[in-house]
Image (cartoon, rainbow, N blue to C red; front, side, top):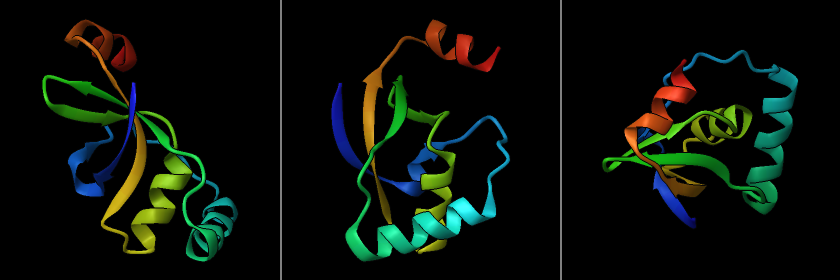
Length: 86
């Protein structure tokens, strides 16, 4: 596992998640003031990045117009990706 700053547009988010607008706003204020403190978790499968958690942090960074997001990247085979999609 490694921690990288990934381009937001390089992360595929195949599952639609509901976010709490108040939490996103609070994270936006925090990230704007002190930066992103906790990386999101991302699977790397065959060179593609898939995000399944950290939806509030992802949306906050996206709404702030940041080009990248700090991510904890774990390589996985396609079989693990299929488990996340099931």
